[in-house]
Image (cartoon, rainbow, N blue to C red; front, top):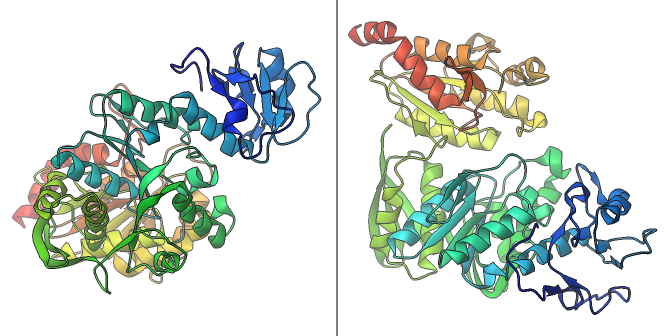
Length: 500
């Protein structure tokens, strides 16, 4: 954390380390700024040595001191004798706590609601934020789309969320008078202890499937990371769980705090029943006890109903009325890269979705299939976050649920993309239904030229991520922008099929 607004006295490190206060941590040591990147150290900083994917900070502690660090916090004894060296059991957790303390513990000055899960996290954050705003609250959000504090809107930065950026964002929300913050917690964020020092007033787990196993090493590690969200909660905080999701139900036996459940199949406190589903909208009945309300949303699919349920259940924990919840849910009529419908006068539907796992694709394609009067055409090319071990399973899902498919790469310069495409192709039982088109723009153009009236075209795997140069300036465009450009450039073919 670099030079956050602090009192001149700073933070007592020994007080922050009350539970394990090392004997070599001087009682007079006060922290006014800190960093875990030795290259960013400025005179007066405390350097926190952490171990991560990019290296071990312990190996650069001497350089950090040479750059002006006034103390080092680490997990093992280091050959440094001219500044205090405080050895702790978990420097990564301490770093997160220190970043939060340096900006005045913002999570204790407003209601912070955490959302995690294998899928639906960002959507639930946006839905819940809309509901809370409809109820009159001032709400900040932090998710994979970016940051919003009610005044400033910033896109998500490249790379993982850092404790520094998290602390600064929460502090900014407090500064503008936010009463609530809704934040997305990925499994990597939880495993890295990025949210150390953040106290959650409520936690929502959308579902727990299989994802990022390459990063976590095993399914058990992944699920344990998801469960860590509960460790950040206040004792009186409410946990919101999916009653239709078996791994989430398993958590119920381990929770001693208040819990609310939601679902569409089994018993749950908050339930939903789909009334109508079309390609451009769906209606469902939201029920809590004896109270029910109809909700109409332009984002389609059962998975979106579950997202609405998660947001509604969390809002009910804060006493928001059902009619207010319905208005808030209905106000979110579009989310970039989340079953996003792209319209250009064509007689078929085009949906852009970020689905890049077997479960997410299954939900996406099931919703598209139900809405299709004709064929379902799928273009899939994964982002770099896609699990390589899941590629054949992804192919099996696309092969079973679509009539035609094109497998492509995520971005022009992606390494090993041809091999990845062939891995996806191995999952198809009928190879006549699929072709490999490496250039993503060409693959999208093929699908749109192939589509007929009543068909549904799904462009999956990348969502809002820019990947292909488009236009004279060469700026990178995402799937939605490429679809719009393609629809503008092939009006003759579209009109011909409409007339036929």
